[in-house]
Amino acid sequence: MDSLSMRDYIRNFSLDSGPRGNQGYSRVLLQLFGFTGHGKSSFINSCKYVVDDGAYTIYAKVASSEEKPETMIRNAYELTSTISMVDNRGCAKMNKSETGEIYAQLGNFLPLDCEVKWHSEFKDMMNILLIADMEEQSADFIVPVLVYSAKNKMTPAEEGDLKEIMMKAQDITGLIPTVVITNKLSEHLPDTQEKFRRMRVENIYPVENYTKEDHRKTRGKHEALLQCLSAITKDVEFRMTETRDPKKEKLARKKILYEFAHKRDMEKLQEEENRARRLELSRAQERENQERARREELARELERRSAESCALQ
Image (tube, rainbow, N blue to C red; front, side):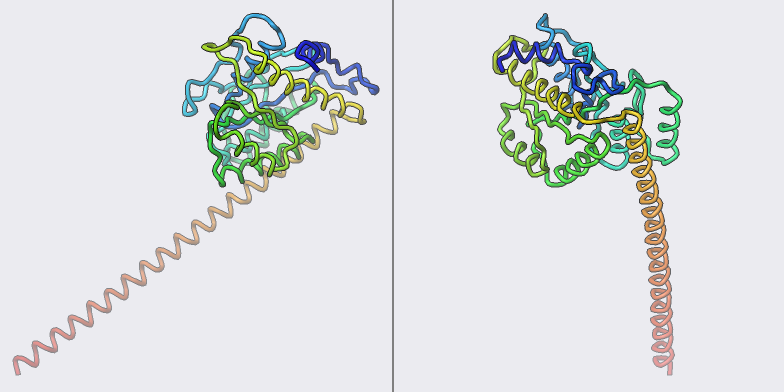
């Protein structure tokens, strides 16, 4: 399929055109997630550029560095009348205090156009689920899309964290995440692709984003971006041939998030108990050392006095 055909296919895609109709879904949400500063916002701007085929426009603000992320609010950008791209807040590290919020965003339990704050308490997660139940939400077909920069040399520890979050993203959404690798001209691209293949990722798309400084249209950039978007759209089209129920899927996502939050809370309590136990053992050891030192000092004092008494005699 050439670039024009891919663009037309993406533009004209409709959830109503499948054999089972829209089954209650109102739109497709491409849920972008990952580390801060890896190109999620630039990817959105680039996709809008190639699909709209107009002037390059900055819709999603781009971070100036990985240390200073620009995206603090979970915003959605309409790609077509059916497809929207969500610029979820990225995280600095895939640790337990941040992955819960990533899962809440992926599960579509955090409201759009609102600031995302990291929570670490079980009660905070329960409040998120309670508020989500009270708010009226559209029935969205969720597609997880991990955005990862090839400029970053993935460490073994990071690979393990990413594998875990990819598996959980699949549990939450029912789809293996699509991986978009930005900065595909980086020397680390082959290694990055291989590591994602080891995670059993089926769809990996290296792209080079357009930027404010470099938005001259090239066939290579256009085709790579359109291939990614058209493949995602075809996957949605394929999934829509199955019998689905958006309400049941939302309940399943909520259960997964609840179980994750509860497990994390139990782990946190266990860690606190272990820390308190280690502290008490350390204090007991310190008291024992002090007592031993006191006895040794007393023994030396008795020996000194005995020596002095013998000298006087």
